[in-house]
Amino acid sequence: MIQKGKKTCGAVEVPLKAKLALACRILGTEGHDDMDLGHVSFRCPGEPERMVVKGKGLCLSEIRKNDLVTLDFNYKKIDGKRDPHGEMPIHIEIYRARRDVNSIVHTHPLYATAFSATEQILRPINNEGVLFAKPLPFFSAETDLIFAPAQGRAVAETLGDAKAVIMKNHGITVVGESIEQAVVHAYLLEKTIQTLFVAKVFGEPTWTGDEEAERKSDHIFKGNRIQAIWNTLARNLERRERPLRLLEAILKRG
Image (cartoon, helix red, strand yellow):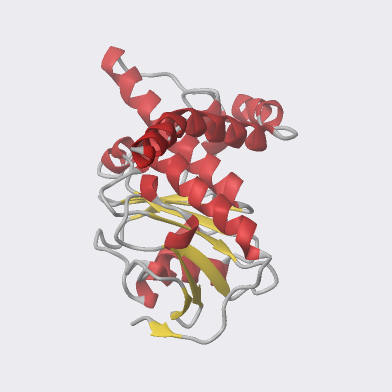
């Protein structure tokens, strides 16, 4: 049960809140919206047992920074006008288990969720797929929503040191050292599985071998590649949102 606390995250989180809201909208417009379900979070800098996360009641694509909630790892609500989602144990227990993780995405994108019902092993089929050349762990203990801390710990244990975990008949949980990395990993995971689906329409696909996948990953994702993909996704979102902002401004002028 979520309780109310007293303190709020410091001013340093304000730019990160704007970035988290942007992250939600990017994912929402890139196929991760599932009604008002799905959530993205970041760990508060300097306060490793506190996080900011999407509030419930809105689609990912609707989120602005005022729709975010701050929680501590005792499940106390610190700040925010909305209630948190019930699946906060996913975030809190992964943060507790992985000190290297500073951002988490849990969503139900169409292709990844369908793939989660097959219990297949994901292999690299496209260039970006080499990011997941090491087979991703598969959480199959249950398919229910993750409401209890013990369930969250089981997800964290299955995730281990991987970039993501596929959750049987449920969706995906993806982690990163930053908001940008977690979002790009989630975007590329859904894209890889979507490409696999299309390939299977034409026949049985071939894979990139382990050694070649490692070499490809080294030069495809070297340098600032993750940041460059994030920047592209942000620009694409801006192009989608700009006409809506113009329309809103026109309607306000009457």
